[in-house]
Length: 101
Image (cartoon, rainbow, N blue to C red; front, side):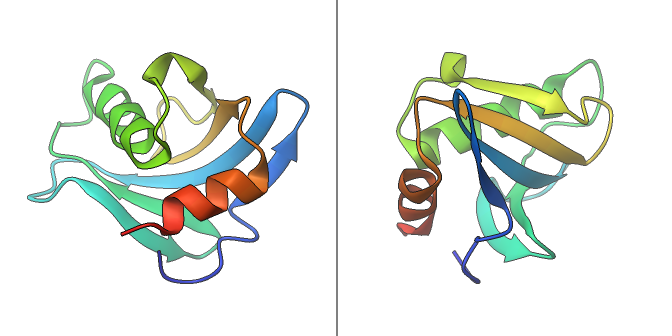
């Protein structure tokens, strides 16, 4: 993950929040890095009927090694910029897991 991710991942009472920017309808799928204080995710699904949100949570859950059920979009359901809650994962754990290749 490029950058430190310090501003993208913050502490929350239930775990950590991760600021993400989703690029829907992409040719690639995965965590692209950190830019502008957000973790950038590319998904292949189009931004319609929650498809891109669902795939974004799946991509993030795979990178963090947790089930998608432990992730929740707190803000930005209809925006490319989202705040995602990762339950039971500290900010330092989240940063470490997202930095793995």
